[in-house]
Structure formats: structure tokens, C-alpha cells
Amino acid sequence: MSDTTVEAPELTAEEIHHVDDPSFQPETVALVTGAASGIGRATALALAANGLTVAGVDVDEEGLAETLAKAEELAVAGRIEPVPADLTDDAQIEAAVETAADLGALSYVANIAGFQHIDPIEEFPMATYDRMHAVMVRAPLYLSKLTLPAIRESGDGTGCIGNMASVHGHYVTAEKVGYNVSKFALRGLTQSIAAEGDGEVRSFSVSTGYVATSLVVDQIPDTARSRGLSEREVVEDVMLGQARTKELMAPVDVANLFVLGFSELATHLNGGDLLFDGGITSTYE
Ligand code: NAD
Image (cartoon, rainbow, N blue to C red; front, side, top):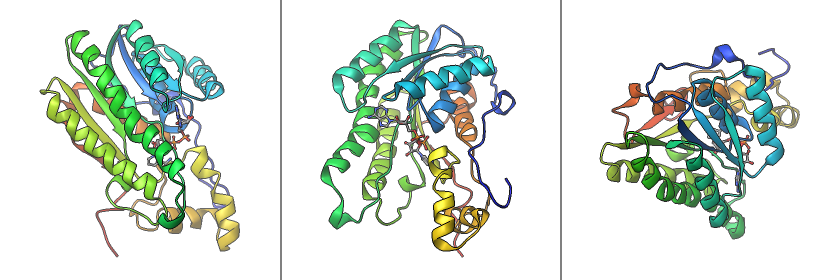
């Protein structure tokens, strides 16, 4: 990272962690939401690179095409099937699960799609709140409801549902009420799946601070200008002000956590949260 410009890192094949897991085969399917961009794209690529067949779900068809192009560039071992769907629409969620189940033994789900909206509670638009809840809470629950029977019936009957939470599922910042409530709820869903999964279907959540997706990185020059700081200062003092680790996580770092969470190495990760926040929520002053 240079002192003047902060860029979203380009994912390389070497950064993807490989786990030698008996379930990571082309017959096994992982459904990944948010696969058209950022963390979801990196996760789709990392799971495909580990040999799985990935159903990449997203409302953004152009973004999904770019994910496929990146998969080709990286020559990943598994394939990614683009599955365009709007997660606010039940019929489209149902169709996406059917498509994923037709690809093989549906065993893994990564609920990653999401978005942010900033406004104080008194001004928070309820339609936006409802949309955030639909994409980040209701869709993960409905996808779990629809995929649990498929996971139990396919392959050896075991599987895992991983949910992308955030430090905002542990503590909150002002003017992000829709996001805060959604991420706390997603951790509740994670634990509920673990409670009903009988040890056969596991669940976990992933909680990170800022990740260097283009969405995050593109805000840095404006913040630097408006606060009279260098871009590096925006990263270290504003975004990672409370963190001890002064480097933004890359999307592939998060993707590797989904690879780990789905693998045998995580047999005892069930209902738990992978809190990778550089110390943000656990240290003070
Ligand atoms: P991103 O904007 O790059 O990707 C989000 C994806 O979700 C997009 O491709 C978008 O099209 C998709 N999506 C949104 N609404 C949808 C809908 N109705 N139907 C289908 N797809 C929809 O964002 P990102 O930074 O990669 O974030 C991914 C997830 O990680 C989010 O849940 C976010 O809350 C979480 N997260 C991000 C950060 C970060 O710093 N970037 C940190 C912690 C948690």
C-alpha cells in the first residue's frame, strides 16, 4: 500500500488457501450469495479453486459475468454457475435453490450479499430498513429453510451454512441502525441453525471490520479531501482507528475464512463467530 493511494487488491491464485478436504469435489455444490462483487466474488472464486461447484447468486448479472471471467483467468479447478436472482423476491430465491440443487449435492451455503445505508434513526427510511432486512436477514433464513432438506438428503447428509456478519454484529456505530440490527440478527440465525442442525449441518458467522472492497476503497479519496488527511491516515486513523492491526483485510482473506469454516478443520465450529477484526471490539484505548 503506498502513502498516497489505497487501491482494492487484485485477487491472485497464490492468495487462495487450499484445504485438502474430502467434500471439496466437483459433485459438491456451494451456493454463494453476493457472488458478483467484493467478498462474495472472492468467496465464490476461493471455493471453486478448492474444487467445489459454485452456484453464484446475485442480482447483478454483469458482475456475475466478471466473476466468471476472473475464474477463467485464475484457472480455478471447480466451476462457477451464474445464478441471477433478487434476494428480496421469494420466487427468485426458490428458483436459485432449485438451480443450485440441480448442479450436484448441495452442501454449503455462504450468505454474503448485503448493503449499507447511513441515516440517523429519526430519519431512517423504513422502506430501506425493510430492504436491508430482506436481503441480509430474511433471505439467509429463507435460503436456510429451503436448503436444509437438500443438504440433509444429498451426499453424506452433512453440510454447513456460513453467514457474513460484521463487527456491527458485535457493537454498533451511529447512523447505521438497519445494518446493525441486520448483522446482530444474522448471528442469531447462525446460532439457530446450529441448534437445529444436530451436528450434521453446522453454521458459523464471519465478523470483520473494514475490508478493502472497491466500495470501501473508493470512499477513501473523498474522506481524505474532506478531513484534510492523507489516504493512509484515513485507513489507519479513521477506518482502523480502533483496530490494533493497521492494515485493511482483503476480500480473499475473508474468502479463506469461508473455505476454513466449510472444511473438516472446522468440525467444532458450530454456531460460533469468526471475529477477525484486528482487535477493534476487544481492545480499548
Ligand atoms: P459489495 O457491494 O461489493 O457486494 C455485495 C453484493 O450483494 C453485490 O454484488 C450486490 O449486487 C449483492 N446484492 C445486494 N442486494 C442484493 C439483492 N437484493 N439480491 C441479490 N444480490 C444482492 O459488498 P462487500 O463489501 O463485498 O460486502 C459483502 C458482505 O460483507 C455484506 O453483507 C457486508 O455487510 C459484509 N461486510 C463487508 C465489509 C466491508 O468492509 N466491505 C465488512 C464487514 C462485513
